[in-house]
Amino acid sequence: MSKLNKVAIFPGSFDPFTNGHEDIVLRGLQIFDRIVIAFGHNSNKTRYFDLDMMLEKVRANFIHLPNIEVIIFDELTALLAKRYKANFLLRGLRNTTDFEYENSISQVNRYLNDGLETVFLITSPKYAAISSSIIREVHKYGGDVSSFIPYRL
Image (cartoon, rainbow, N blue to C red):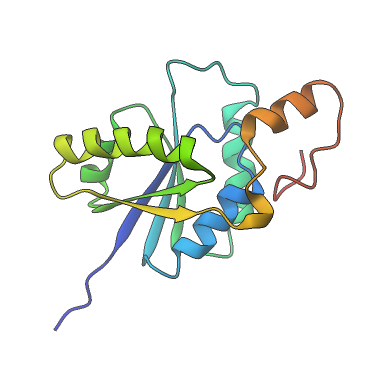
């Protein structure tokens, strides 16, 4: 009997990629054989951190883990999952607001890709207060964000 290869896409704008994101990926490796961290383009957001720089930092952060791939995509997440033969989307939830938003997106992704399941991991308590928008604001005004991200800026 062959082993089922469980591939998950972890999509997001990751502006920036935080310790909370890293935690979700590392915990996700206990469930999935392979995780693709997918930097997407959100038409409702203008990036603060340079995308190429962020991609380089995240790739370097996970270089020791060959079952993690880091990519940029500009298409529907459900279609990206089909291209990567991924049957799962991995998402982190900090609170009920995140759940409401993520639940709606997961329903649409399931409609667009019938075999696609979204797996939610609850954020570890020590990272629950961290959000990319807060980190951007602190950084913008010269604050030290090194405690919130798993790499050096």
